[in-house]
Image 1 (cartoon, rainbow, N blue to C red):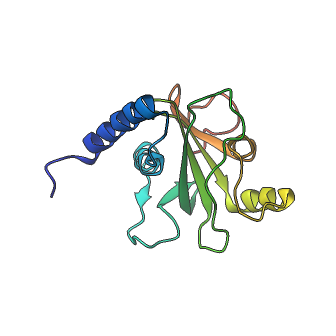
Image 2: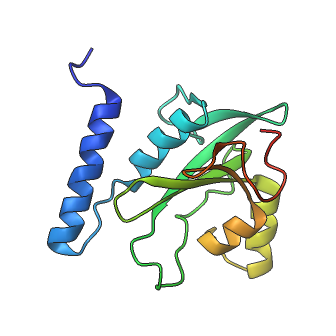
Image 3: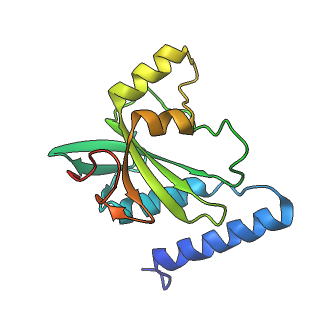
Length: 163
């Protein structure tokens, strides 16, 4: 067992990513790991046990067990449009995608969930062959599960109380 806790390591990773962006103007490719850690912790999910799995965690949602891919985006410049999720592998086994939205300090601000059917329908309508979707579209088709302001299941908009 390591002498470092995962939470402490993630806190340090956030600090390093923030300082690196400030020094270079570039983003370290670490948002995925921070997103996975935060989503599992904040939504009380079970991490996938198989490293090569097609999903990152299992989430109990509205009485169903969902295999979820976890994606993250650090929104550094709100004025820039076109933020997109990474490619979704539609041929693999998963039920939903959890999107973790972070601020410029790599702190989680919101977490959304969209089930596979809605994502696939949205990608097919856009005729996007790469299997990616914009953050804005994901927010429209998904539901907000968590926010920094309200926590889990206490959202003021929509029906997110039956988490």
